[in-house]
Length: 96
Length: 435
Image (cartoon, rainbow over all chains, first blue to last red):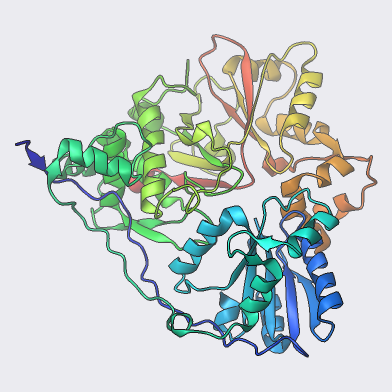
C-alpha cells in the first residue's frame, strides 16, 4: 500500500452567500413603465433600440424608456435611483 | 440584482456563450433564479436588422421565443425558489484528507488547482519552510481577489499564499515578492473576454537579493526566481480568487501565453535612466512590484537606427489604442536613445505620445474605445470629449503620457526592443512591507 500524506488546500476563503428574493412580478406590461438599460457594450445601443422599437410596435401601451448607464462595468447609483423611483420593471442588455 | 432587491422586476439579456457565467454569478450572489434572456453570439458587428432578427427569434438557452423570455421574466409569478433565494457557506479546509501523492496530484489537476504542469505538493513541512520567508504571521489576512468586477471577492492569508508558492516551486526568499503581488488586488487570472494577462515588473534591491534575471533572456525561462515567482502569481490568483475555469470564472476567448508567466525585473544597473519605481515616487532602495493588467500584444524591433522614427511610429500605431505599451528596451537601445537626445524616459514617452496617432474614425471604431472611452467622451470627460469632436480623418493622439511605460531590460547581446500591451491600469506595490 502506498504511503499517504497530508497537504494544504490551496484555495482562498469564499464569502458567505446570503439569499436574496426576486422582486414581485408584474401581472402584465400594459400601462407600465419599463426601463431599457443600454449597458454600453459595443453595439448594445443598436440592440436595445431595436428592442424599444419592438415594444412600440407590439405593446404600445407600455411606456418604454431607453437609458444608458454612465460607464461600462461601473455601478450607476443615479440611474438605479431613477429606475427605482418611477420604473415598474427593467431590462438590461446586452451582457457580452 | 440591486434593482431586484429594491423591488424592481428585472431581466438581464446576455449573449448565449455567457449562460454558464451568468448563472454562476447569480448563484454566487444568492439569487440563482435571476431572470435572464439570451440572444445568439455575436452582437458586436451585427446590423440593426440582424439584431432585430435575434429579438424576433429564439432564445438559444431558454429554448423559447426570445421575447417570451423577456416578457415572461418580468411577469411570470414567483415560485418558492424565487422567494427563498439561496443562502450557503462554502468551506475550504486548511488541510485535505490524507492520500497518496499520485492521487493528490490527480485531485489537484482535476480540480483545476494547477496550470496543468506538475506542481510541488504543499505538505505541512514545505509550507512551514516557505513561511520562513516572511516575518508576517501565517494567519494574517493578505487581501482579496476576484476574477472580474462582477464576481464576489475571496479572501486569503499569508499561509494560503505560501501554499501556492510551494506549488509553483518557489524558494522562501521569494515569498515577499509573491505576497506583494497577492496583496495588490490585481489578479493574474482575469476573466476578461479579451484574454488579459498581468505583466509584473520587479524593481529595487530585492532583484539581486533573490537572483532575479534582468540580463540575457530576462523575459524567458532562464531564471528560477523569475520563473517560479511568475508561476506562483498565476496559481495563487486562480486558487485564491475562487477559480479560473472556462465559462464560469474565465471567459478569455483566445487565452494568453503570458498568463503562464510575465514576471521580470528591470536592468537598473545598465539603464541610463532612473528606475521605473523611482519614476513613480519610490526611492531607489525600495523594492516594488508593478502590475500591468494587459499583455495583449507584442511588437518587436531593433535600433534605434536611421529610420527609427518611422519604425517607432508604425509600431505605436499597431498597438491597441485602448492599451498603451510597455516599451521594453535593451540597455543598448536605451543608450542609443540617449545619444539621440532623450535624456529621460519621459522625453521618449512624450515623443511617443506626439507621434502615435490614428484617424479619429479608426480610433473610435475600436471595440474597447467604443465600450469604455466613448461613454466618458459623451459625459464630457477629457481628453475623450475633445477627441470625439475631431473630424473622421483628423489624426488624433492614441495615448496619454501615463498610458506609455518605458522599462530597460536585457543583456546587451543585441539592440532589441519590444512594445508589450501594458493595459490601462498600473498598480505598484511595496515588497518591503512583506519581508
